[in-house]
Image (cartoon, rainbow, N blue to C red; front, side):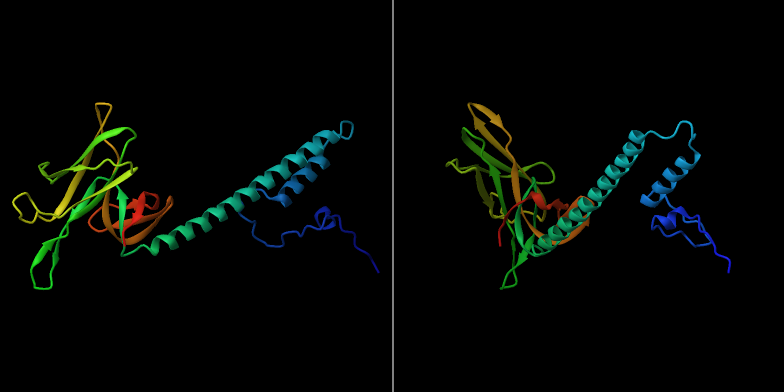
Length: 233
């Protein structure tokens, strides 16, 4: 009985050959491809000037390092996906809650009362207190840039001081519905500064972006999860 001899070096190396009749469309080389190229290089080398052992080892070490980097990238990518999923779950628990958000625009609207009348929702906010501040004030302006409310903010050693407005004009009438701007001024060593302001807003929904979850606010633009500094209720 005639015996057959197999000269498939990849089978000898424990690497299964691709039996598919259609060539595989690959954009990246893997370990099998690298061994095939290396074997081909050894077959085509000049027998009088064979590959130097140092060069051979260097090529193997380079590929091993590249494989390790690819595996690390895959691990980091999986970790990022896991972190983002956890952030989305945390953010979804905030839907329907009111929060203090980094920003300078707040929405004012009318609320229905038990007797059928309406009342302004008012506005809640906060402002960072710069070190050494001796005096602070806040102004609230409407869409036309007119000041509808000005108030002093106490400086009592807190890093962040809250303020509120009942939504009524100086004559007691409710302010019109819409968005209002908040600006703050702090006096430090006789000079004025514009500290960071925060406004109260209701979180209506959560969106997912490549940079992580975004919180959509009632009547306002979306903000990052890191822009939330306090949950009011």
